[in-house]
Length: 405
Image (cartoon, rainbow, N blue to C red; front, side):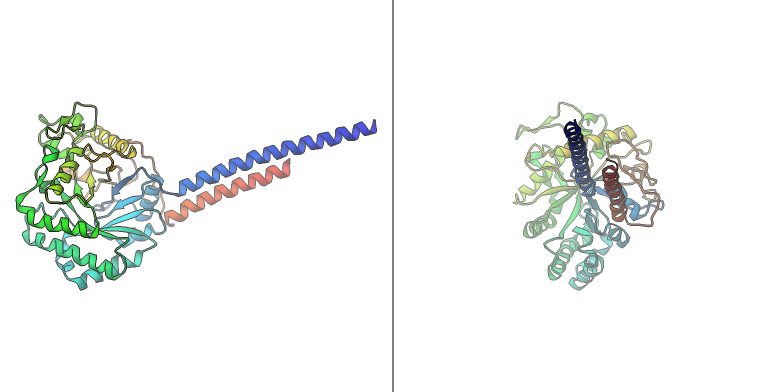
């Protein structure tokens, strides 16, 4: 009897130990999964989309709060129109890559190599490597303006900025380019016959040679919205909003285009090729759709803006290429992060944002983020501290479970 009692006691102890081991194993597996997921949360993965962060407004949230918003949205690429030190500091130690801008008013000074290097030393060098600055745009839409003197400054300014980066050992991590509007095209359809305006040929040819030499991309600001607004009776709304449609056929290549944006990009590639280059990538530095406009701004509605951006994001997520370049995923910076209430011009100019300044989405396109309601800490510390608390609580749970069992 005694032996049987001892045997039963040993058996019960073994069963309890085995059960505890199984439970602990399951709990530690869950904790490991949690830690893995936590790490993925901390890594800003994104869907391959960049965002333009304009600041022509007097009601925008602080850069620290914007940093948290963008990281909660998993957006890892941001384009500025200046080199705002407050923004660059707020994103220190984050995984967000920055395109910074030299405004058109700087072009004359940037033609001077000494002034160009001074600018880099003051506005770029102090922030690297804590903030990931990957590109400098020199000027914006210069060649589609009327100032021929400014046009003549563009390439020398780009060259001086690049030379300064070389001198400071930064040219391998920061590239130099400029952004153009589609108005530089003389012909855009069919896409395979795209060509630049003849009066701009001298400027563009030299700029293309520069891009090929330093391996930097050609940036284009492309807005199918403008084509629809100007000719709503001739341009299909489905075609510009990426909705199902018959598309248009390029009669030379027989390629079918089911949306205008891709046709615009391929027209730029064709224009570049016509000038002797097949070694330059094209990236879309701006595209978007306004959620509101004046009475004569046809199509500027919340519904259309939501459709344009949600369909665009799906294509970016699918890593689509254009019909003429199917193996090269489109590279896009959406315009813009916030509505900017001080922008001049028609009402649409103040209503391109995905978000209102208070962090409320203008429409739902599947990007869900959070805008913190305080400014005291950097977003990186906030995120990491939050995750640390969660991990700590999980570990306490393991310890408590061990003691109880």
